[in-house]
Length: 357
Image (cartoon, rainbow, N blue to C red; front, side):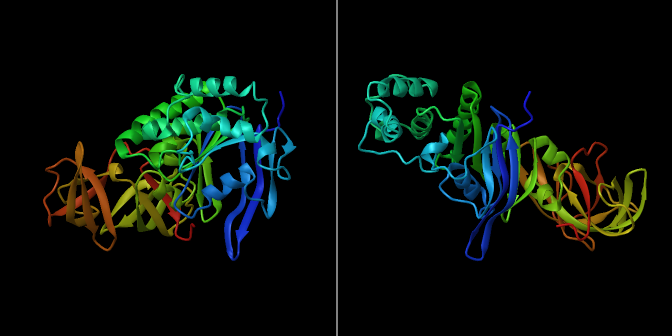
């Protein structure tokens, strides 16, 4: 079995003037794997996708497919299909003509085009819609036409740029599930860009989290949630509050940290000694309780309904506002309260050195 990755991005960098949009990004994918490029706006996600597709050339680095360097090749020669954020469908052409457009530009034999179009539409569950106008289709159907057009040339890699951003929230959830099932049924190696965590969780086998052009962490969603590599990852994946703390002692991987007039016992993580640190606290990792001596304490500043429970904003004594999830009657607005660590807080408390990026 070959040790060569199916798709490998090797130390890619790309500058636009003084802005380093992509900064030394290296990634590997196995054949048939689905990777989500996740990050805030301006993190470099779409630039990585365009470097992959060949629409941008890297200042340094290479794109390799089964060991072959694609970097010098044109987009057409790379055999990579791409679905753009706004689909780029032609409203004056019917569905079949839209799907055939990429085949005609690649000079596929005219007699072969109808079969390729029919096969691609069947893959996305739109068989028999060749003569329909794209303007008569729903947003989800238009997305599938764009996907069929990308698949018709039989690419080796599929790229999706914010594929669900144009859909309303209800349709987005349904289409996301359909898209996840479709990609896995086809079995094509896929890289897609999103800034929505739920999309990354549902669609990606792994997630690559970017920030300011740099790769922060790569792994399964649960890995990034339970073992974040930095405070940024802890804050971006899921929800958490950064709380400055003082590490008083560490014993057997457990740190005692001083905060809000009291102390907590938390996993030590990468912190190895006493002194200042930052604790990332998820709302489910702590709870409100009647105040007792030695408790971490604060005042309830606000609360909001969040489905099955409420989220309380507690102004910690000597600390920042902290979000805590709890039942409706956990505490009243303006009440003094203790904030305690839940017994089961896996993935909910992460301690980092004070100077961690």
